[in-house]
Length: 358
Image (tube, rainbow, N blue to C red; front, side):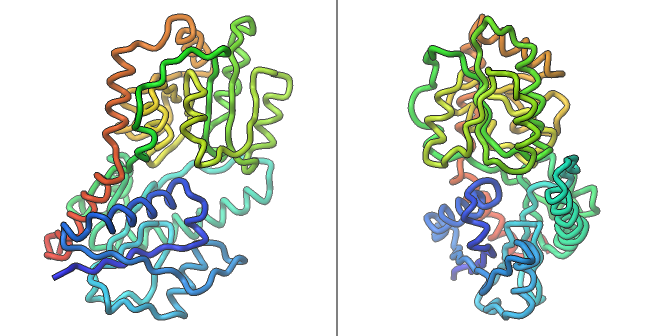
């Protein structure tokens, strides 16, 4: 007999492609492929309507209040985005929630719209929905040991919190490690310009890089959040080049255009770009004091300051990336797969259904 699982999602959210939407799509696609082997059948449930004025979280919540779902057809309800909140789930159904991070960095910006949006999101998603889901769920799935510790700090019993790491696309893990020499030694960043990404740290490092080395910093990201501020930081530095949004289908090519990848984030629930870059054979530099899970930061180079990051970059250009470390980092990064994420999740569905987490 099959275990029927409802995966709750939003079409509007999934269009964005990265982070949580990536997790939802990859979990669903892989579970559909291999679920029968675990006795699990999964279906997605979407809201009937999206209310633009309310945003993602409140639109989702309102829909579960006014539009009754066919919960009775499922044994397990899985909410893969702990920032959202579902109503009217029958008490006889098992409820699983995935929480990706708990303690994000507060936004500090002159962009009033961004600031207000952040404060509302923090109130709704973290102070309200996150705690509600943590208490209600029969099982909480988290991306990393770091997030597990944060969920435990909210009062959830350890036995009801399980770590299932995320994966990287197969395209990042194919082919030989890229060790080619580019005409221009290129430092790269791909990601958002949200405050917690700390991109200014990397931009400031370029001020300390010897201009005669010919090093260039290629920055990829949509023109949102702190973009205007970061652009102003590099206004008089021709080494820093903003290239706009990185198209999903060009990511491998973009990574392969770099000689080193920087990801100076202050906080990450996981940090997929680190593994993607390492899977392509790149050295990755992070901010030493940033909160990045130990599973992901294992083979990273750690910079204590912007000046220190500049020294590491110049050292890599001068001496190259240690081949032994490159091989270990690449093989390790390629061991994180979405199929493994799905398999571990399917095993947890079975245990929940069998009452092992009751």
